[in-house]
Image (tube, rainbow, N blue to C red; front, side):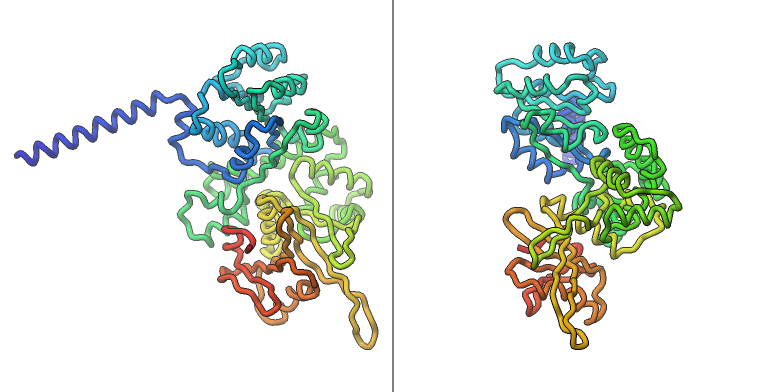
Length: 454
């Protein structure tokens, strides 16, 4: 009986503690509740914001629409500040494109917003202002610059890619803008809290991509609808609205052709000819070139220059284009072109960019004897990646099935006579190893987990 009474007492005490915990959670303010939740913390970008904290510049978070810019500020970074002891009333977060508990209709008027903010900013410590879709407030630039000039105010903003582009930052903020560019989820972030095998996760990732919102759409049908809806209702609509485009059919066809030819050498003339032959539509080089710029401004594609490694010069007119998210690329093509060679190359490129590398595509030009005659040959290097400290020559090879294929991948690397690292990323999950030429082979999954070898 005594042991039973002890058990009852223990259970009663545990239950009371549970009830007390639940009561405490319910009583927490919204931002405090987020501290108890598990979510993708976007540590790559969180660390960039931490490094820029109180640096005297306006932090501008740019990136593809729906890539997680707003969440990064209002939840991930705000939670970090709370954990560091910043009082909650010293974090002022406003989203100007939606109606929530922090927003009043009059705050879209510049004078009302100014009054609201200055009433809350005192002299007791640092204040952190987070403005989402700030471009909805007419004349915001002067107010933001003025707030940033206060010694105890740190300003962070995001803006729609149809209104606030990287090219606008210096003009709007007089050289005081510090840009943090956000990409869709890396493969490592995508795998957070997932229990499937790495092969299952990889298949889902290379099919549907890494937009954070996909986590709310579990079925294949939902994912497909979500991605195609974004193309139609957000991305293309943004470009048309900002640039007042009349020839919307040409813009749509150009997006299709760029998705279809990721990783191929291209230029505006070649793309215009492809649209004319495949889409049966008239297209001139100048308009195509202009529309490519619009799609890049919307962060849908990135263009990569071609660099002659031995001649140390760029080819001005030849570039490659990569989609910032392979899921968007696939959805644009109705999932018809699922060539893993090109998709893996696109994923490798995005991963290098996510982790801060500047990237070119390379070519090695050499003169060789063939049939008794000297001929000029070009050997391609998929990527030249540098971050200011390290430099790599990188080949993306989904399969190396035999010695001929292996030599094909190595032809360019073996002809580069400098001392920078040379890496071949293969689709198989292999242990890293280095051959007699000093070329390192690494499996795709290890590269996506740990990056390039040091």
